[in-house]
Image (tube, rainbow, N blue to C red; front, side, top):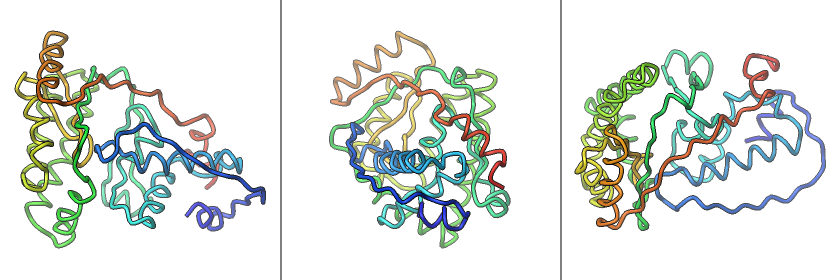
Length: 268
């Protein structure tokens, strides 16, 4: 896909050879986008090896990663790839009109300082997120009204979430996170989500923490609106339930000066 993109956009590549190898410390099948992280890292290697980072639009890169995963038979969407390409905190709008016109979503980096401390909970033996994706995707394609209306509400939660972050209205943010999981549970059903995944959310909620999946299962992201004492209770509850919990550390934005210049149109 990288070669085709460069050919289609008249980007010349030199003829030198390279060897690519990888390793990862991302837990497998934990809803943490481990496969796309490898593909994203590979794309970054290609951009730098061929010195074409300034010629490949940053907003096009998530599509390139998604296309590569599609060729590998991996069921996925764009959100994880956007987060990995941009880094930090990113607001994403996949409005159909914009997607149809531009070929990609509208991606807006946000100040990471707006995000309160979050915690990640995951199980050592998580579910297969690919299997969880499949049925709902087909129902969407078939025009299932429940899936369509629920997905529209999920999109609305993202808009409200952005506003709550800007205003630092974290009590509202917690409610939005909980509603996100409730909608996912409604769409997928308990059998598809799996008892282990549901239990992680229930453990978080047992101490009053907000919780939602990081992806399609295997891990949840949690927020304790009442601060450190609530975090300690959550840590105790996770240990008793046999789950791993750790604070989320946001990496700074990954896009470079060349990326920003490219995204505003050097390579129109």
